[in-house]
Image (cartoon, rainbow over all chains, first blue to last red; front, side, top):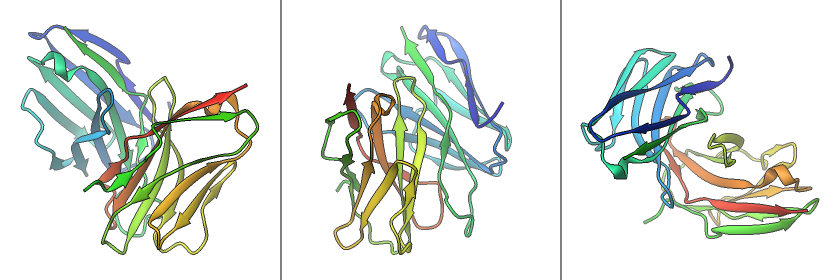
Amino acid sequence: ETGVTQTPRHLVMGMTNKKSLKCEQHLGHNAMYWYKQSAKKPLELMFVYSLEERVENNSVPSRFSPECPNSSHLFLHLHTLQPEDSALYLCASSQDGVGTGVWGQFFGPGTRLTVL
Amino acid sequence: AQKITQTQPGMFVQEKEAVTLDCTYDTSDPSYGLFWYKQPSSGEMIFLIYQGSYDQQNATEGRYSLNFQKARKSANLVISASQLGDSAMYFCAMREGYSSYKLIFGSGTRLLVRP
C-alpha cells in the first residue's frame, strides 16, 4: 500500500448506529487530518493530530470522536449522527515542521457517508 | 472575508488546448504557500503543484504551471494540452505561516474537457 488509504470507501448508517472510519498513511508523515466535504461547501477541517496529539478541533460536534493511536493511523468514531452529517470524509497527512519543503497535505480517497 | 477565492464555478476547454483556472488569495502573513489540488469524481484530492511565497520563479510540474503574481495576490493554475482525464474539480488552497495545519481551501472550479 502506498500513500493514504481509507476504509470503508462507502458507508450507510442509521442515526442510532455506531461506526468508525479508518485512515492509514504510508508516507512517514507526522501529522494527520480529518476533513468533511459537503455538497456545494468548501472543504472543512475537522481535526488535526500532530505526533499523535490533537492540536486542532474546529468546533466539531461530540458525535464525532477522533482517535490517533500512532502516527500512521487515524480513526473517526461516529455515533448518533444526523442526516446532515452525510458527506465525503477525507483523511490527509503531512510532514509538519519548519524547513521541510513543500508542506502540502496528501489525501486519501475518502469515505462517502450516508446517514439515514 | 474569504481567504481563497475561485471565481469560476465551472469551465469548459477543448481537448489539447490550454486552460487557466483563477485563484486569488488574501493574507497578511509574509510566509505562505499556495497549492492546487485535483479532485476527480472518485473523491480523492490529488496534489498537483505548490508555490511558496518566497519562490522567485513560477512553479511547474509537467503540464501544470502556476502563474504566481504576488502583488496581485493571484495564483492561477495553467493546464497545457488538456486531456479528457483532466475533467475534475480543482481546488486552490493556502497555508499561512510555516505550519501545514491550516490549509484553507477555495470553493473549487469544475473543469470539463471536451473531445
